[in-house]
Amino acid sequence: MPRRPFSFLPLNPRFRAASAAFVLLAALPLAACGKNESKGTEEKTINVQVRAVETKSLRPFIETIGSLKAFEQVVVSSEIEGILRTTNVEEGAFVSKGTVLALVEDRDYASELRRVEFALKQAEATLVNAKAEHGRKEALYREELVTKQQFDDVATRLAVADAEVERSKAALAIAKERYAKTRILAPMAGFISEKKISQGEYVRNGTPLYTLVQIDPLKLLFTVSEKDIGRLKVSQDVQFKVDAYPEREFKGRVTILYPTIDERTRSLTVEARAANPEKLLKPGLFAKVMLYTTEARDTVVIPVTSMLYEGKSVKVFLVEGDRAKERIVKVGNKYDDTMEVIEGLKGGETLVVVGQQNLAEGVKVHVAR
Image 1: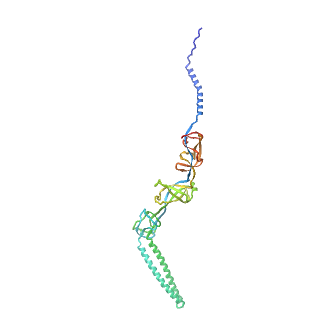
Image 2: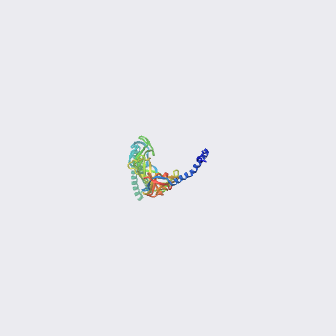
Image 3: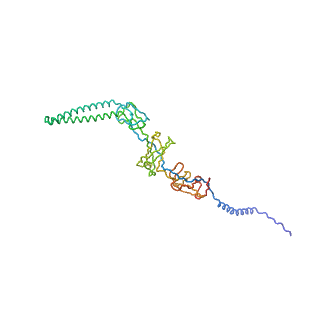
């Protein structure tokens, strides 16, 4: 019987779909295995830029704000009563010590001075006569030609005459002083910052006339936080800037550390003295102050942009070989665009300055050139 040729029977469509699914499921574990093996062999590399940690000679300082005050400020007042005859200076004028600022009408004071001078001359003449009479009576008394009562009367008149001379001398000194006070003088050299009166006004004892300020040197007042007061001492150098002259730096020196802390701001007021020979600086100007606390010393500094903040901690990344190393650091003062590092770094170490945000401990890095 002849053989029938072999042929495939048509498969049921449901059986065909089930067979395909089985083959696919069997292949999945093998594919997944291959992918895991590929991942295990690949390690991500982070591109970074680095810079060597620098050590510079810098002076530690405290940054704060303050304001300038006149070194001396005096309100010049009248010490007598009268009509103000003249006013000789205006606001902004510079006056030397002893300059006549104003004059009070002096006719009454001059008349009183002449009267007291005449009274003194009379008293002195009376004293001369009393002394002469006392001399004569004393001689007669010794010869017992006058009574003791007569001699005592002459001695009493002599004592009264002598007292009257002393009283007249005191009155003359007062009259001279009052007459001199009709000329109101500048008690110190300085600038007239305010004129409070006008010619022809009636002034009394104590009436303010002018405000006089001394602006060379100036006082620089500023505050320092209580955490820094242990670093303060008299004679420390101060450098400051004002908005009026942004390109110039002015210098001063600490003269006074105030004795008490402000309980509201928890800060201490410090006073420095600043020379002002060009008269550029004015009382009332706002100042940005740098108070140098010690002499220059070697300081480790890093770019401010290289630091990462994590809560209260500051960290940086270094490169050792081809790996990133995390380092917690303690920072101090800021110097322009760099920050002082007190602990955690030393000069010469390789610091990541770009790309540190993408790093973690031990990550492989590639240093971009």
